[in-house]
Image (cartoon, rainbow, N blue to C red):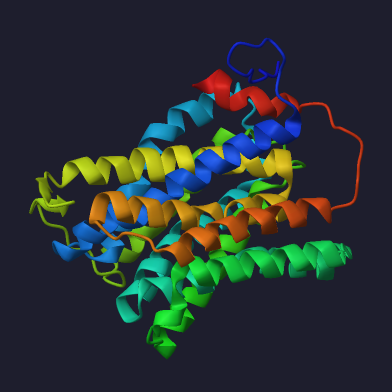
Length: 330
């Protein structure tokens, strides 16, 4: 039985679209926190591989029991979707996170993030080529406005240097990001969102651990205190937030959003992660965004609206049985 979310002070359930947008915004905000939390850890001596491995492993440990519960004994859903779970764990979890942190090692954060977030455009192109879902001119215009907003938010006009190696890593992260939206939106596999998240996080943690054990992934961690907004904080606090909030909750809510909105719209709403990242960098690292960045955030919102307006009009769909699995497992 699905559980509808209700607005405060009202018994009326939110529509499928409203619920999807709520999960998408919360997921984007959670993911957006990761950069500001991880930067001081990397500065303290953590390697990207170690930070990503601990983050993903912690999230897997937390989400796995809920994912198993949501299956309700339907283990055939796992065996029938081993390839999907494997691809999600390797591409959407392990590769996307590791490649982005690797890109940041070779180039500035802004251009690396911009390259990764060409993923929504890649999703539109992929659906066009695979399913013939040719985007309307409104969708294309919305994508263009959102891209312009990203340029302003990331303040690329300041002249960031670009490394070919960094660009290659960022493009690899873009592939993982696009896979995240496409696989998350697949309703036909029957997997509850939280079960897919649990399986993907587990596969991601195991694959990263295997690479580290084989010596192919540098793993180094420290217990040095991290510094946020001028305050020293024990390393385990930001690492715990990275695992619980920016991974466990973010991936689960992101899958739920993609199931309700579809991969195209969900991927564009996820652009709000960039805005969230700017805000968290301001609060935690003291990096105050300028007027251009605020204007860019507004353009991203307008672009998301344009993308939605450009989608074909369809009848309202009744909430899927899996739509309540996140609440039921919580």
